[in-house]
Image (cartoon, rainbow, N blue to C red; front, side, top):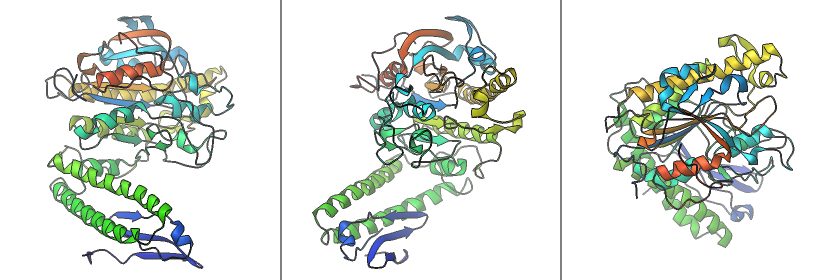
Length: 465
């Protein structure tokens, strides 16, 4: 029986055809696709080895990828010296107390981010290639294509172990369509995670929504009850959808039935997510108030997203995450550190001393936020008595190297954490011009995922990081 708690399905018409039917529940909306049957005038009824992801010591192993925009000022980025005998440069000074927990990796390239035959569009390519290693198809239409990102390769194998297979965060806009950089779709520039070559996984920029997704809404004592009520509502909503969909199938032609089956596959995935969440019992109760929303101060926004990522790892809500601090090409200004000019403008410094000083200060501003995040992970003890940072692999970097010239070789990359004892931090390593995808293959291995022989343009695995 259909629950009277749900409102009547709304109808929208244009002259002679019913285009959409919407089912609206509490805080939810499911809409069926537009069918050929409807276009013919029919009335369409709608209703809405090593264990995976575990360290050798038995603690959860986490991986995260943090992206900062527009490359780095080279003179201030790279350390002096190699191996364990290295001195941090100006940009990385905020990491001084964590020097033993990081590896600065030089000599990693993303050849597929270079222009090739595609011309301009380095910012879009830098973002799109960063975790996929693939060349993005140059299009501003719907035929986007790049590759499956390393985070999603891992999430698709180990995601069942946690309440959320992966977590996608951003401190920038969210755009999955439209034209952005020199004929490239905005989907390339505003997404890091790709679950298929044509499907970006949109990140969430609102800290409040991230928190409520992870830990429930309301005051601390109300969150579990609110979460359970939402789960019941979602189940009722999905039952309603499935009942009407079964009745609808009898009215549709063959191609429309295929389209409906594709739609219902997505509905069943929602059901699986609900079931997976229920298996993990009560929600974690973090010692943090629900954020009010997106702060006006960008530094505070970054800190909140870093804090939420840390909480997600500390509570084992997920073991895979991405954080896009800003899309490549971002022209955000930084008045909080005395820089009213845009970031992208400053990155094209043309060796102007004033602009080079400003880009160095911006790079360090980002690094201060990252150092704060790593410090929190280092301070938090894990189930094996080691730190959460020891049991993590955190890649911090950019798909552009020198923002002034738009280069994509010798990328500015930091690998933080101990990988549960499988990494060798506390070093500056020059890798001699290898595909960055080679690093990803080794990370996938450490997560316990087998059968992955190639990512993007990989040519092998990096030994000894």
